Image (cartoon, rainbow, N blue to C red):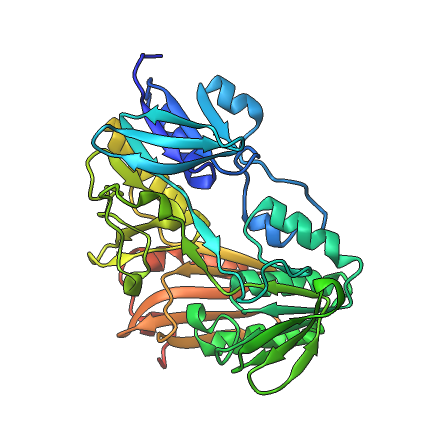
Amino acid sequence: MQSTPGVVVVGAGLAAVRVAENLRADSYDKPITLIGAEPHPPYDRPPLSKSVLLGKDDRVDLKPESFYTEADVELRLGCTVTSIDTGAKAVTVVDTAGDATVVDYDTLVLATGLRPRTFPGTDGMSGVYTLRTFADALAVRSAIDSAQNAVVIGAGFIGCEVAASLSSQGVSVTIVEPAPTPLALALGPRIGELVTRMHEANGVRVLTGVGVSEIVAGDGDVVREVRLDDGTVLPADLVVAGIGSVPVTDYLDGSGIELAPREVGGGIACDATGHTSVPDVYAVGDVANWLDGAGSPRRVEHWNHTVEQAAVVAADITGGEGVAAAVPYFWSDQFDLKIQVLGDPRADDDVHIVSDDGKKFLAYYSRDGVLTAVVGAGKVGAVMKTRPKLQTPTPISELVPDA
């Protein structure tokens, strides 16, 4: 290994691991250091709201311990980067004891992810949770056995998954969502109505078009009820807030690294291959706002997108072969169904429901007469076989003759 600082990755999640793995696969022979704020080795986040929350899995590590030894990747865990000096090519790192050290780099990769929003006025209130980390999942899991009435605030993917998991454990669950349906912002109201049907069929109460005005604690500062904007009062001894997240970028103050405007998703502003505004500094994953194929800034929070970005950045660092863009894909497990999204759906796309048996469904999305995405629940084969149609512009009329 060469005596040079090499690549330093701020963050130790999926993006960081995949950058390191791809660098070694591309014959990068300099040091690689991953700096993570959590005490755990890098783990997979999607299981947190499902199998980890239900106790079916413990922490799902992305790589065995042997990977880091064999690939000569240094893990610095329980450490937070507090500042970056891009002129000196150095980051300041503070450990759990409060001791600060300076770590030099040749190339810096920023992969600090997101921080969940907390509901205002609930600091120190027992029984109110967010779900982003392994510790969060354990905290919610420990509260399930004694919970009778749970309220999930927000019906995005995390909120819907948490609601499904809690309901499957016999907890009475109510989802509260200001939008017209669950997943309305991501998939539009038509598919949101089918997701509502699925939750209601499994005993979940779904309240939409209404927000939460206050979370009220009882004796011992333990949550007692949730009050809605329309005056409804919901009893609650367990509340999970899934009201969005914000990119973790506070450590960039004074670094000269530009952030993307909030109206285009915020995060760290990048070009189409992950370069930031400062030479030798990249950003990947949920925190990164890359230019898309049309040259527009866009920040995407999906597992497969992060994997692809990591491969692109590693290839750029090593001068390796470029990575062909894949068709975007993500999934969500709710109850006994896998909801799959292939392509790039937008809430205002035209939606063509081509199959619906009352539980499982398949829908095509189109924009200006061209197929943009396929969404299915319990339709794994039907969704995946449309991938070739999404790799090139396909008129929706080829799939839906009367569209």
